[in-house]
Image (cartoon, rainbow, N blue to C red):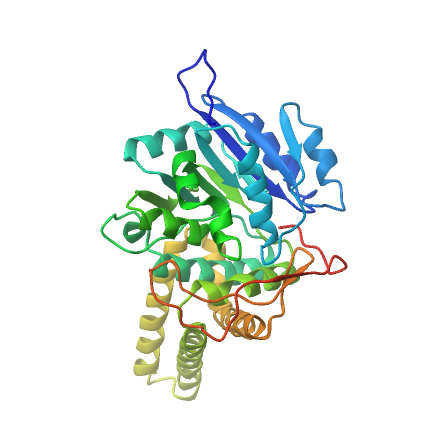
Length: 373
């Protein structure tokens, strides 16, 4: 049963952090969480059979409870099993599910709880500020998050009259009452997109949800290498968009048109210095302006926006790869292989559009390469 400190009128928040081989990121995450003030909290780290120093790091923080989940049930994803274990022992009236690669700004937990209460919602979720380093991250991450911002419009998600539902598992705050009512993570046990699936269940009950960019509350660096980025988005992209193949073609054409019109402008200018290539240059400016207008919605710094044009073909490649790997049952994550997932495009309440994909069924492969997120 949820409890609160009898000496305080503040509700207890159970902060649940699933962690599987997260020694690179976990320390900074927990340091930012234990320093949160203005709220009653308990912090639970679920060590999901890590083989690195994850458990030792978690245990080094006073007041942090470290548990291990039960053996992975058949057809469950690893993360769902871990967060469900944390929720089972959590005592809070509110549950905050957050990833081990997040860093929480001072006072953000108290502010998010106040925001949820003010808006009278059962579920509040923030999309963290994405920190990017190097060419690959700067190029492709803005493209992906701009597409997500267009597909899962926060205004629609937060509108009770709209069927759109979405959440980001990197920061998902939910009342215990709503969580238990919809069946918790057991109800979405096979979903690789458990955050969006959980939001859909909550909204379907008539409860309010709220979703927004949360750069004022939490930040994260999801991937540190191109290999991590590729495997992470291979797991998710085909499930996030209703027609990944069509979207891949569209973004590839956009890239070719922008680059082609730019090339034509340069060529014509060199060939005919007295006659500028007006048509090609106008087309290039218009297309690039449309592209930048979309990219700006993703809240990335100027440096990332400047090179994001080169992220378009990378995004298309990742979409195709994700679609193929899900179809073939070759999706890998955190040392586990999943047999595929149905793309239900859960964010908009649409019907399944990838019926040939099977529900996620993990095939344990502990010898597979581990990733830090």
